[in-house]
Image 1 (cartoon, helix red, strand yellow):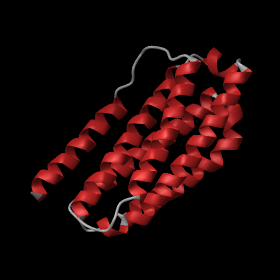
Image 2 (cartoon, rainbow, N blue to C red):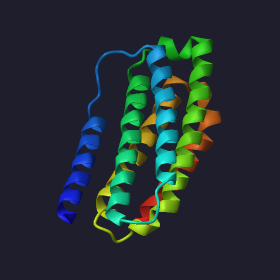
Image 3 (spheres, rainbow, N blue to C red):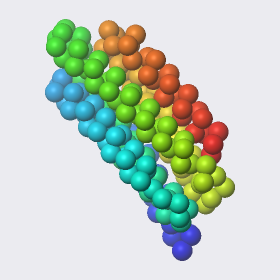
Image 4 (cartoon, rainbow, N blue to C red):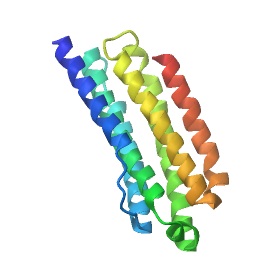
Length: 183
């Protein structure tokens, strides 16, 4: 049974890894950027609620739920980074309204992600030493890479956002480092 659960967790990790590597070549519009950032913030909030509702019990079941939710966030995060990366410069730097929307949404994303990671930090201690510790730690590593990539894209495509959002990304990085140490 434990082997089956581990295989499932490894499968989720593999899917998220592939999603993180696949970069669509089509250009994104400003509406794609706004939609993907909005979706990311909503997913982070939704996953935070799910993890918050976890009750003490089966460690493997808890671990699989956590991995599943983090994988959903990773998928949304990858899509947001890709949308920013593939958007043409004109849609993100010359349109003042779009620029402000992006800045506001990125701030919302970092706030939501901070909430998620704080919740994860409070729930992961019970998984230390479990069969899911390794795949969970790997997912956290993917999150770190994806958030770093998103921050880079914000700095490149929406430079006016950087002073406002860098502090949020720095806090995310600190929380992710704490999660890695926990695991």
